Image 1 (cartoon, helix red, strand yellow):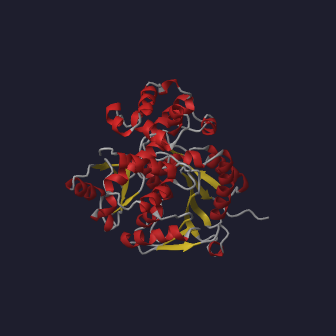
Image 2 (cartoon, one colour):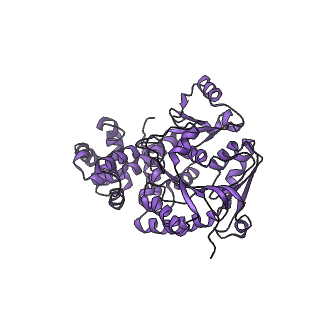
Image 3 (cartoon, helix red, strand yellow):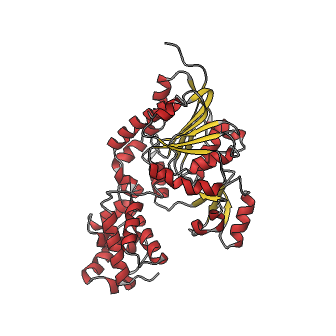
Length: 424
């Protein structure tokens, strides 16, 4: 799409609106697009790609521009990462900018400090160094600077994966089975799948392959009582319902009514009849107390930093901090403790985050187990192997990484209520 002075101006306005990051970048972009309804699909795509590209490469761009204006960030991004040459940019820029662009094209990324090459805040590099080598941190950072693939999940109640792939290919959409999830499909490019007949009929849902794997770890059975404790908009809920063949009872709890409302149209398309969305005010809600000791399986996809999703949400690097990680850990322990009370003896709980940090993952599990000796850990690798899902390097915990698995970064631990509560 050819860049005109008008389009360049809109790009700069969009970056100026998003960059203070007073809200999630995608929310701010939607507000921007509402303010400029004249933009067509191509225009919106170009602006979104540029804004997210700048967020992915912001540390290096700020080296190039000296933490300068939105205009300079846009021009530096176009010159360094979109490959636009001076001949293309000259009609759009001032003479002084032309000389500056020549200078920044000569700056070498490989000579920059590690955190700039990895595009990680220095505090995050420090935390990752507890469990990653410097070489792997750099490789991880470089992978997270790329856009994520588009994964979809086949609703096994309504369709088979092979049939869906065949239909997509007939429509000219390149699709292949995901390597790990038995119901996943990875698409090439970014087709408008939410307008596709397969999507509108409930046969497919957009869901990262890593997120799909969590459902197979929980492995709910027909007729069981199951809880999705932090259901959000219900992507995992719908998978759990399909694994249950729509039999039994599946509660979808969340503290956000808005997110649960987003589940309703998805639920209607899915053909599921066993899902019961319920709004709760906190992990101490009376609705939860009524279910204590009655539930077979619980999924806790806990609120977290989201740092495993930086390919999709690069703005999280600036919206999280060491202080926010500490606060999240307290919340995660409280939620896990409340969710565990729902399980009957012999029940299974999956605790998961889309974080890469031990503070939100292993440390939460260690602290929970220290206070709850009636729970034990099940081996994730063995549980998945039972379902013919072969995930390399998965043992006691599930640790998916965009670097090794081309999924979002996910952690999961499987806990079993192994005996009755100890008597005081």
